[in-house]
Image (cartoon, rainbow, N blue to C red):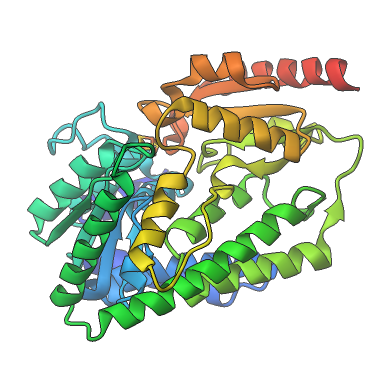
Amino acid sequence: MADNHLIDRVMNRLTPGRTRIAVLLYGLSLFFCTSGYRFERRHNLINYRSFFDAFFRPGRSVWTTLLTPSELVSSLGLTPIVMESVGGITGTLGLTRRFLKHTVEIGIPSSLCTFHRAHLSMVLKNGFYPPGCVFAVSALCDGNLRSLQEISEYYPTPFFFVDVPEPDAPGGEEFLKNQLEEVYLQLSHLFRVKRPLERIERTVEIAEETRVWIGKVNELRQTRYIPDVKPMSMAWHLLNQTAQLGASRGLAFYKTLYRDLSRYGRDFPKDKLRFLLMHLPPTYSHPVVETISGRGGLIVIEEFNTLKWPPMDPKDPFGSIARKLLSIHLLGSSMRRIEHINRLACDYNVDGIINFAHWGCRQSSGSLEVMKERIQKPLLSVDTDLVDSESSSAGQIKTRVESFIEMLKAQYR
Ligand code: SF4
């Protein structure tokens, strides 16, 4: 009770300086942490770096959305921070409700997804320093434009936006490539970075090497898993693909994960049910996760860790990044996503699929009925809010998951 009161008092007087102290203390705890596998510690430190720079070098921090091409940012020596991950952190810390309760009064519509509402609320409650700029893309989520535009007007800070066309639209690749080049040159001008075109070639070279290592990791995961990793923590590695692609730290992460998988990985036990995770898991502990792991199930692969794109050519950096974005199966017709999920289900020999349909998210829920008809494995979809832990009814969900597991056992064993 006293702790809750203290948290409320701090949140009511939020300043960037106070948040900075919290970020620093969290960083110290990460620095001295020796538990867990090396890839987990590396993941935590890499993603912490985005928060550190947002508070200690705010002018070099670029606020992005999930599919903003990080190559354009890290190539200029800037650090991207994915704003949806700020919403994720408030969920992990159990603070989301405290932020959400203020959103309507400060003018944020309640129909906006809670990932965006949480970070916007933190910004509008004066929890951050102004960034160097914000950079959104239209891909995947229609909350991106609205929320980052709001941030840009609030500070104010420069706003960059790339409109990602339909993957199969005639001339789409050229249209996207030109936008990427234009934004990149504007960014280099804004941050006064010399020789930007040489820098982007090197960045794309690293991105290509990382793509190869991501492929090796995913291949190894078809037969091996690392025991004792938190059941859903693998899902958040997608941030290393999206926000760290082209940075040497992103490459180092995948090499470390591959090494840990080779060294500590074990073959899948034959008696365990294998699951594929669609979309993302909750950021807080959730009855689905607990029930699956409590009953010996394993999440063997996550949809968002299997984004695929063709080889990248450093001599054609903007074309390569455009082709990468357009290849992502989450864009365009839902048939692309269905084919991708069916292929994964086959490659990873899964028994069942779990989808967390995030409230208010068209991406995770919009085409669900069509998907249920065409996906070739049993699918359990749970309506919940991925960042607001007070939103789900634990008892009902637990019963549904248990029935799903019993049904699978009867079917496969
Ligand atoms: S959960 Fe859906 S609506 Fe929310 S940020 Fe992600 S894609 Fe956008």
